[in-house]
Length: 362
Ligand SMILES: [Fe+2]
Ligand SMILES: [Fe+2]
Image (cartoon, rainbow, N blue to C red; front, side, top):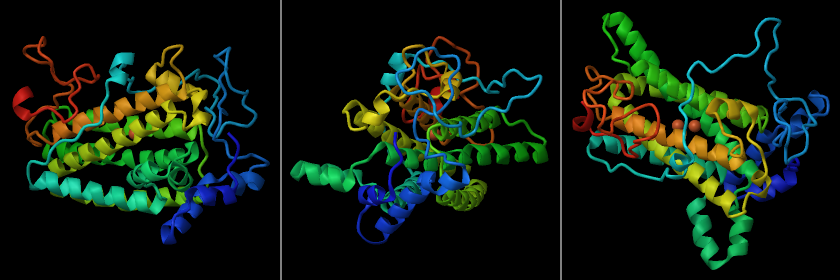
């Protein structure tokens, strides 16, 4: 993929007023290629097939021409470092069966969580000029104009994915950290929640690292992530102290949005709207982490895996939000008295989009 010129970028992202300005800034600055061109000795923005792939003999894309963004660190004695939490294997059918879903609000806590998510989504969409509903509405009247005004490109989706994944890795770490500290100071068992929460944040970080193999953020994006992390970490930390149940519901709703976002990317890819992604291979880091089988290592497959992970987070957090936060065991790592009945697990064999109710599993 070639670097996007700032002028094109502005045209692609432009919408009226402040959001247009910010969008232009995001595009130019997140792009980073032009900014880092001189300081990095001629490197252009590497949203392309740039990772090295010594184990793969065949590739449908051009050989990497530029240095990898963050190459693995070679040492004298270490051959490779595997993921501490191996990823469960997903089948092709399971990946394709993931659906957009919404858990109905049942109490004030759910409502507060949903309102918070809707506000965040609206703000982020407005700032970045992402207007899916407006685009669909306009496309019915004037397709060309809709494409001109709102079309999402590979680059815009990538910017969005990188920013959102950098945020998505926060809640699991905060939740796990708080339960860890609680267990230490109360001298009580945690019943298995900590590992699942930390694993979730690890998984989100793997999403981020995978996307970072495809695009190198510029200083504006780094600054935006720094600011967002500072605000979100502290806000979520305080919220978790006040009501962990509401926080799990909040993450459940956040993951509903993530499934929607990745489903749209997959749909656009299938509809031929993202041609630069059609032949793109998944980077090695992703192939190893998800154990992506030969013949299923393209960008679309990668998006299917990530969407399934988000659906899993959706299930986990909606379920945890249904449980007694103090006494209930983590149902995703528990052994059941009747293992023949479907029950929560680490994989997605019996995934429940809106979470398991407490009386189904405890
Ligand atoms: Fe994610
Ligand atoms: Fe997620």
